[in-house]
Length: 347
Ligand code: 1CP
Image 1 (cartoon, rainbow, N blue to C red):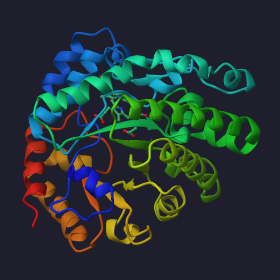
Image 2: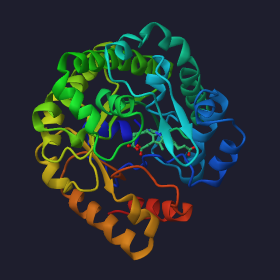
Image 3: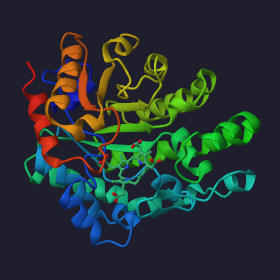
């Protein structure tokens, strides 16, 4: 069985399997070359041949244990009919959802058609991995978790404090719950379609989970993830799911136990063995090198990597080496190669 799937099945594989969030992207010259040839980022995500190509680029260059579908968490709200634009150097820009009409306008009936190119990308990547000899590489499909997707829809893009979404969760709880339910249902269908197309594992990105109070974290991070995991486990038994409740701190333990995900991605601030000890023993832990240590490279990267490997070596639980958040564009590609040598040499 593929190393990543063994790990997500509960086995402590050593050296650990390794892949990196945002492993396809602007730090790679071959990605920039493909990106320069398309009109915008959404066009790249919805052109299967190109999306499959950029998914495979980091696998060819580094031989990671996982390929992650090239798409974006905002493709799902886009497919629901919410506007989306990626402005150069500015990140995503969306209309600000703030009322009943905004939630009522979301149309789940159009999603399947609009995400059809994503499913074709999944099929092309599976074929590509097989024909190019990457028999040990696992294809991960993904979606944004409902709360993080709602953050972008309500804030209209990124935000420093997420004041609008937190305000809505407190002041308009029924409306907010309706939005969360719509996104949860749509995520189940979207992820299920990715498995049918060939995704071998799934990941749920809740990048802004850490801005919520414990009570709201339980309601809007744990509850939707629990519902998504239960529905997918029923439809696709044996397909593992990784959750990434970023900056959850000690609530990552509650998240793992309650949602029954197979793996939990931890951010750079998490002290891995201590947070891992709060989770069921078979839950895989994934993380958590600082992306800026990867930019720095050299002795600093080696020291941070050694600290993570030393902490997990004797933990006797499944572990996947990754970053604590996505690769940043200024990362020198040769530092990624050096990191893989360090992880694969782990004794
Ligand atoms: O052309 C470009 O360089 C655009 C940059 C870019 C890329 C490469 C964006 C815009 N999205 C992506 C791809 C992407 N996004 C992947 C592909 C697979 C891979 O990992 O290689 C994935 C899994 C994502 C997920 C994603 N998008 C998240 C969750 C993980 C995280 O980083 O927190 C989030 C929050 C987004 C929103 C988003 N999309 C793009 C940007 C610049 C952002 C972040 C904006 C912000 O900081 O708020």
